[in-house]
Image: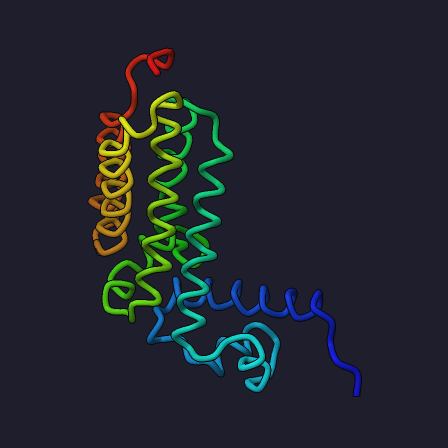
Length: 196
C-alpha cells in the first residue's frame, strides 16, 4: 500500500482546517463534532488523527490559521487612512454580519476562545497581536508602536460592533449599529493621510 507524500498530507490538512474554520464560525466549536467536520471536508474520521492529536489541537490550529489569514489581508491593504477605511467598510457590513462562516474569527469565536484551553488562547493571542500590529502599521507606517493603543481600540470596537449587530433580532437596529460603527471607527483613523 503506497504512502501519501507530504504534499498530499499538506493539502488534506488544509482541507480539514478550511472546513473546520467555516463550521466553527458558523456553528461554534462545541456545535461541531469531528465526524461532521471530516464529513464536510470529504474525509473519513480515521484521517483526522493523521493530522491532529485531538479536537483541541484542531481548534488551536484553526484559530492560528484564521488569525494569520486576517493579518495577511490587512497587510495587503494600502497604508494610511484609505486602506483602513476600506477594511472598516468591508468589515462592518450586512454581508459580513450575515455570513460568520466566511468572516472574522474574533467576531465569531471570541467567547469560545475565552473558555478554551491555553493552547487555543496562545494561538489566538499570537494572531491578535499580529492583527493589531498590522492595523498600527496602517495608522502610522513610520512609527507603528505609537499607534498601538489606537489599533487596539479600532479592532476591539469593530469586533464588538459586529458581535452586537449579529445578536440583535431587529434588522433596523442591527443596521444602525453597523452604520454607527463605521462612523465611530473613523475616529481612530489619522486625520491627515500625510501625517505619519
